[in-house]
Image (tube, rainbow, N blue to C red; front, side, top):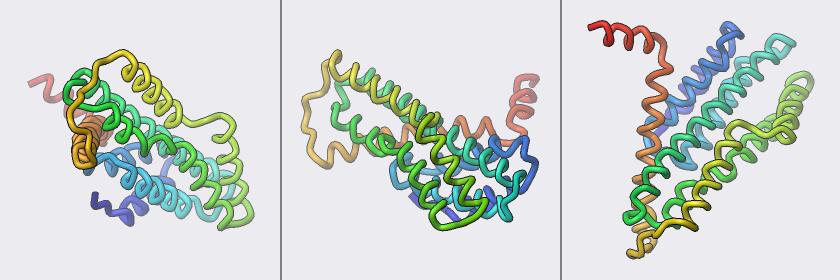
Length: 221
């Protein structure tokens, strides 16, 4: 998947420097648009997460009470976007579970695997960023990482739902017995990642500025 991470950073930096009331919504939209560009896989998740975090840090400089609040709003938007990505993958899995004769349990497990560490990766990225800075910026990053560590994230909650759903389906459905070699599993993972990205594209399109107005115009025609 080819991602323009520098553009993601610039877009997020600009969003964090704008009106605090809509930062989370804008960062969520930026993140979803980036994740929906290709396959929704582990590489894309890590690249986009790091780019958003980097852009938010730049946009929150110099750190004061107002900029600290803006950064936290940006991280809320990132968390919500990652939760939407996990939900899109869960919806793709639900479709695959309904076609269990065509998919293997291992294929679905591999599709979900990149999300299993999503919450820890998010918290870890914040902690790493905190160690690389000082003063108010370090305090803000550390506080946010600690809060997420104790309270959890929206993304983590959605992933746990998907894992539980897959576990239930694995025990109650008759799954395909065809060859589950490495190439077959990769093909299944590619198909599901593509389905998930398609679901996410629909959500990202609805979050674009003017989308609601365009929908109303279409309805009135």
